[in-house]
Image 1 (cartoon, rainbow over the protein chains, first blue to last red):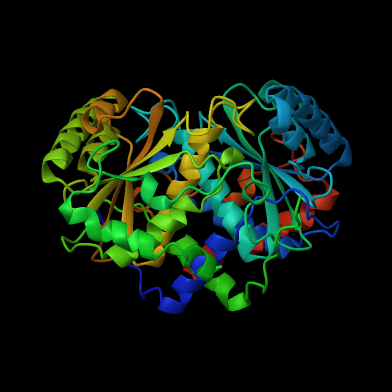
Image 2: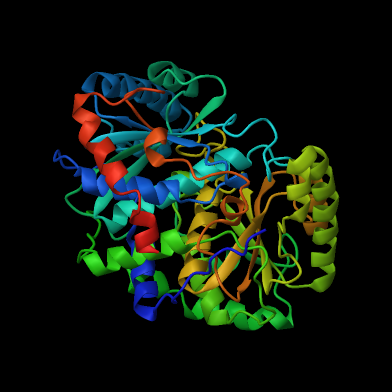
Length: 246
Length: 246
């Protein structure tokens, strides 16, 4: 095997801070879309960021279906509305009331919709790294979505993930074959603004969990031994890091 | 509902370029780990980046199990080795020969291992946004992994995702209960260098697919209508964008 080429140069502190700013200011956008189109130059960069996500066995299982047609979007919106009504019925009392007030998609208002798929047959039936965990290929498509999402934020664009939709209907509308999984249906576009906090946090749907409660050691539920105490203290000290980095 | 606070300030062009640099220089690292420990300050920032990933219904289903114990890692490594041998047998001829030459994990050499999980019961049985697509919660944990991966690269650290492992054995070793999914097992640490290209691309396992082949319009396999031609041209023009941004 020929020795491959090494990367040159390091990420500077300033570049690192810029990266964190993008991460911590990213939001799930549903209600702030503007009708203006997205430039091809911008869309192209965002799609490249998605395409350079990690993928199991380098299979690159994703496709990006761009949807601009009003007719197609109206069908998607109708499928969302049906599912959304079903979903509301699953909550009760005040919770249902709050659910019904939330705006949960921007299908028709955003400039473009993108369905990110996973072609499970992309590189044959045996895939390096997918031999023991079947879901690794769709996880790769999710990595592509997260790259796309962050790139959108870096470009000042909003993105929202619509998951309240029946998969069978989505497949029918977009003509997606059996061996392909529609992993995420995204709404992308220019926005009037981004919120400081996630909307579901702001309206009191659920609180932000303290990170230190989610970090375990050596095993599930494992608490911090002596050698881990300093990390736990650091996590407490950094509680404001995301806000300061925004 | 009280009007929430808006974000101030825009992402500058320089910040955007820094973000893309992180995206395009990120690698799946298996073989370049150094034995030095990772500072708590760095680990804390990376974990915050993961915790600020998007999650369905803001359920934040993830936990981060940090594994430093040599004993636990040796068990994980043994489970990997067993699965890796099984996997090699699934390929034949030259393909199997190449597979056996590849280094596919850095479990023992990396400074720390992190298992990122998805607690499907995190916010009750009915979760906003998970009502119609069951896998949305594990997809959220994948988004956290991708944030963590990029943050590691921004900090100059390497990360590799070990997926060649039997889930039942992994659960047993880490004591993970039924309602929790071990979504990703990661190796994180300082590295001697990053490769310019993904290793599986360099050794000829699979080629990088041209992005324009993966972009469809209005439906699965939909080719570009007149209104989409300029984007396709832009994608062709930007073929070197990832390399230049690295």
